[in-house]
Image 1 (cartoon, rainbow, N blue to C red):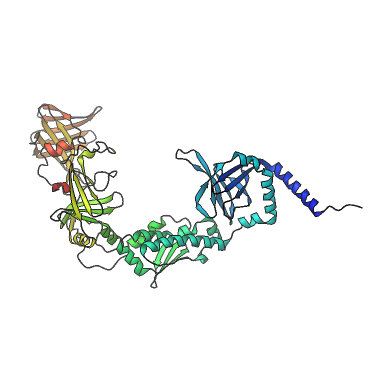
Image 2 (image 1 turned 90 degrees about the vertical axis):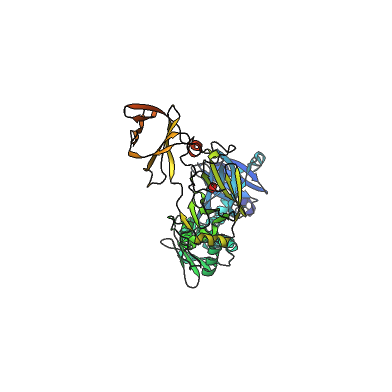
Length: 532
């Protein structure tokens, strides 16, 4: 009789065949371990860039699966298909120096955070590549890997809704609201779900409103106008609020600066006029909060800090996107903007060479801080530093501060000039030229002559400024600067008499110019150091 193979022997033959296939396909194996009890076996296949990776102990849906992975062209990221999309579950991070770092595992539990892995030589010897590949082959046949990789729209929707709910929770806490956020899934295709972070696209208005709620004005507006946020996809970004309080946020694939778009919507929203006068620009300059007609202007006014000595000295620190603060100084009824010297310095810093601080940094980002003074605010006071003098001012209550600012007028900086050229002859006479400090007045030059402390303003009859140099002519003579190979050569010319002059670097001699020459003696520069 012919013997019929038993089921057990058939299974043994199949397993042997599978292991034979696995052994033939494997080019090597490395096993990594991590906390808590995570193990990642990476089997490199003979086909370049192809791997089978088995994860255990992660507590996620990766566990127990021997999945096919591709290594990208950078040699850093291992990707596979999950829910119809390509995901990097394993990657090599970059170090600060730009070189390769440690291998890390990302799991479906939370793709934002990685779990560091370490190579295990002992486990690499113990785990057989053929066993990992045999499991892979079995899971390919029973559909386990196909189910893992299949697009699951309900699961994707649920995951995005969970992520959006986390953003909404933070927004509601800050804004003291209970506003739900939902996604109009009918406007979003499968391909968009596969390729985009839907929750990320939908969270922009929530994040924008959360930041705006730092001010009471914005918080009150959001509380009164919005009771539901709906996100949908369309042809362009758009934000609408209907009469029922539904805020509909429309976005689209590839849309950029969405949060900025949403922020500007609220900032430009007009608000009912509040009692009291609006800020005046009768002095020639509109303050940062304008006429307080929009929510953005009201928010700026609310964030503006006002400090006073209780008499006639007031400092104002208004929010500024580039420099944190924009500084004003005045008597409470009229304020002048204090010029900011450099974008690299803080907004409360200003140049006032009349006050010298020998202990300050002589070269901070190219600036001699010994010539700079400042205003700094803390919880309840402002500290004005003028040279080595420190004066503490009391911060005004928010409502009193706003009322003061809305009733005041604002103007451009009081000091209208800036140093241009300084020279000296051998007898100790100085020849100093300043100019207007605005684009409109920069061609307005003045010439002063005389010994230290007694320089006199000269009536100029002509000014020539071109690529070859500058000539400042008076009825008594001409100050001439000629551009040459060695730099500018200066001289004072009276008829046929030519007096050679020594150039003095302006940037290194602000103290001399403002304190010793006498040109600006007794002049208010419009900074807090005029009085404090």
